[in-house]
Image (cartoon, rainbow, N blue to C red):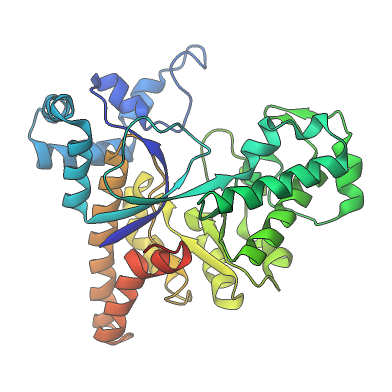
Length: 354
């Protein structure tokens, strides 16, 4: 059984080949950059070439026509078919990207993305004290409504060099500096992340923080997990570094070994870097405790991303177990626990699945 600890809303719709290719694109879309053939670039990504091959093996040579036929018959049943084939029984959904368009045929938990409130919740139209009050009230209400935790993409906004300083937060709150996402207000955004951690600790819910690589808007030079060292050093709650901080995943693995609060998932690098699936698992488990690492995919828009990621992860995990056994590093019973924790038990515990 698999719980995917990091996805976004997706749906199953009939698509042309171009629509299907571009639906999983994290780079620029057509027309956004002049004189650039982004379609060819995305068609020739290792991720898409792998997805195409695996779907042909599942659905036949004309996989897109078969896919579209199954979706026209029953889109929810098509998703169920994929999830059963991959062994997916649960999802943790960051609903800050995309919208729910149809039912998801497995259990899922929702995370509230704090930047949704910061960027679109009218905080900057209030006084500083009223903004903080509204922010705290909203987070508490979301958990009371059934959300299972919080998510921050501050790495996309002002980076992971976070400082919890109210004086700087008040100063930056009134700054007129603007970035592509709106008010820059770094000190204020930092302060709100620190407030989120305080509330999450009190309510005993996890906080996901984006680390490492992302789509075209990421501030990659400011997304290293190690920038959060001071923040997590004495934190008594649960912080999940999504994407394992890839390509800085060894930093994350070491931090999970040192700090009780740090957990990680392997989303995005699995499946979007398919040839790295085995190596990232091997390098993370060089030091990371077995109770700290979780499977995730970062699936969005189409369910096939979650399906492919689960298969790649299972195959690479089997390869990892073979190497651990060959080198006589971990006993078979411990490897079995390692696998159950990675794919299911850790996420079940962290996100309180029934």
